[in-house]
Amino acid sequence: MCDYSITNVKSRPATVGDKLRTTNFGTGTRGFAAPEDATTAVCVLPGTELAFASPISVFLNGYYIEAKQLEHKTAIFRQINREQAHMHHDAVEFPDGQLVLLTHLMDGQDATVLQLPATPKTEVEAREQGRVASAG
View 1: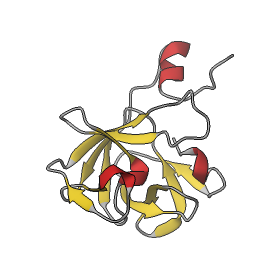
View 2: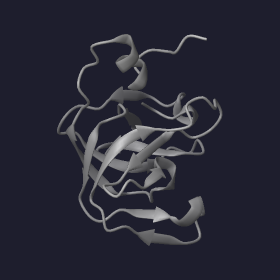
View 3: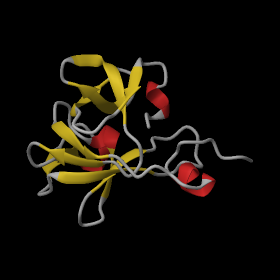
């Protein structure tokens, strides 16, 4: 998925094997783009598995003054706080269970899409993956 604050940015869905780079789109958030086209957001479905080229660097508490490097090089894309409309939803979950908003990752980090989530078999699974709008 692509976070609410990059809905006005040109986008395309992620595919297996895509090379991605964390990118600041100038809209108040970061997301993924292909290294050869930083103007197109690459939207990732919840459950997508990612492998980063190096340990992941994040801004501490979302502040751009200080950053730290995590020991992890793999993550699963998640969406959090989906019931709150004007809030960042795109996040990555690390093997230790830690969730970090995608917008808190430092720019310029390279990742590869290892695996997309399984195709949903029910409407509930589709809604959990963010592929259909929830009613109500």
